[in-house]
Length: 75
Image (cartoon, rainbow, N blue to C red):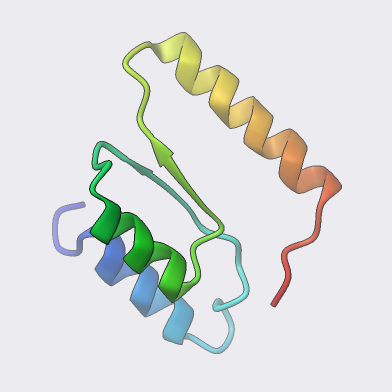
């Protein structure tokens, strides 16, 4: 992201009264536990490492859509 990193963007969304309950899933290349913990502390709904293959991207995305279509996000 050009002007904000993912954590800054997540903080901004979660501070907005109208958008704070939107489930946010982070797609990232970082597997650093400090960043993962920070995202979950702020309220991310999911933290996904970007796959190397495009087909894996599609598969992961389909799985997340299926999961969220059957489950509710808890405030």
